[in-house]
Length: 73
Image (cartoon, rainbow, N blue to C red; front, top):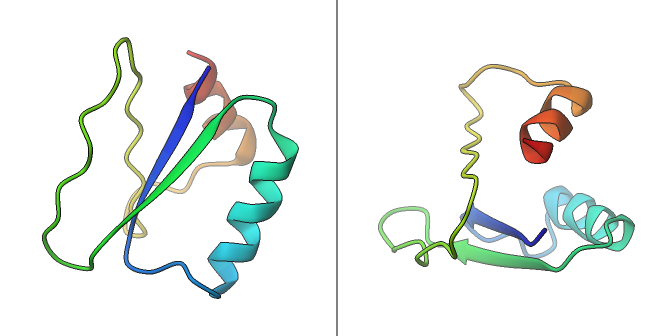
């Protein structure tokens, strides 16, 4: 599996950067992190086959187990 995280806005030295770094060290598959500007910008074309998961702070809250299950499918 290859994981490509596409984030809106700068992660930089934010608390999210620490979380992303900790997560990246724990997984065994390749990880790519792409940052897009707050507005505009285009996400890179996905490699196929792919599973797209879109996370939004206003969306439904997922537990770690639910999120892992989505990635496994």
